[in-house]
Image (cartoon, rainbow, N blue to C red; front, side, top):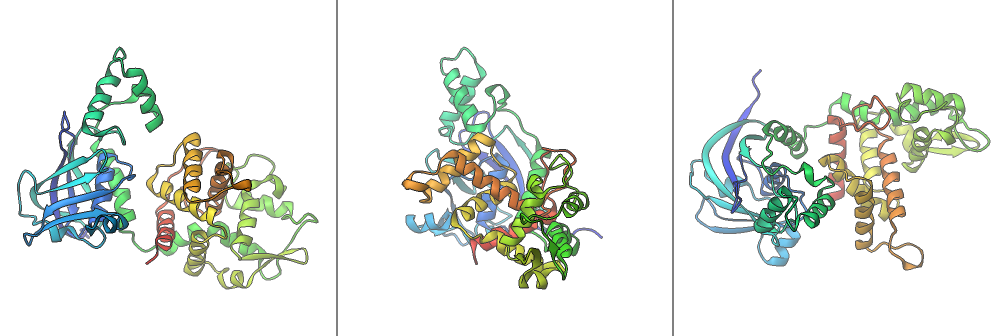
Length: 417
């Protein structure tokens, strides 16, 4: 069966003033919303979605429009909010002109993207495509078109007086050595791979039964082990060695924690799974045994009820600091953009401090506390089977389609109706 196709726009988008010109030719569905188009442009040009954006145009009815996102910024500025605006309201696919509307990103650096209509097109439903383009997108926060031109010039010439300073800045801003910078790099196939992932995030299909079973598998496994009689615990309140060893073998976790896997206190994946099921109110300790809670008895058969229970539990943890970090981790996982260790703990600490959190004595959240909170959230996520199973310890694994759908559901709960 041929995939269903939908009407689409064929758009050539270029960054005003770029030399050599930075441009992409994109196919997007007519029904795409302005916030979704913003996400497409962020992906297509390698932006990091840190700043406000706006669209200036004359719509299909001849009305001038200034549309701002996110919506709270639009309210402050007195302009039209982006949410709910569909591209079809603004553009006629038959319209062809050198500039049919403008998209500006980062009102400080003022990156203006000019849209040229190339005519109507068709796309498979739920798809996005880049069919041509040239040059990598600018480096975020590089000072606008003139600042980026200065960066290109300085990094290309080790003898340039600004080379040491800007090489250090580039390393700080991107985490990459200046020698890796290639302003003329453009890989359409790699970009389309990222657009495919973005399309799945923007327009996810409902999870299949197989995807649900895979995501909840570690949780359901331990619920089934507890069964109707519960699991006898050691005197110190841990799972017995036989259960720990069975968990590592049957859940395929041997690569995650090298060792004998016969003591829960020394087998962190199993310890975290058991503690997390207690935090999620699916298991509880009673008279030296680990037994199903009332919710655990209702959800032990797995399926969508367990999936939904876990999504709500992840979205709404017991403390607010964990909720803030969870939101960040989910965003990084979905975007495939988790920062390296040092910048990551700095970003987590800065975000917590900006949100008003403090440690004892009213002091700002230190880097080691931020790292510990991030680690706790990642261990929580690893109690679910969200990723393609790793083959070796330390391997970076991609989200499965089911894992992506689960995190999108959590993200939707966090954002509200």
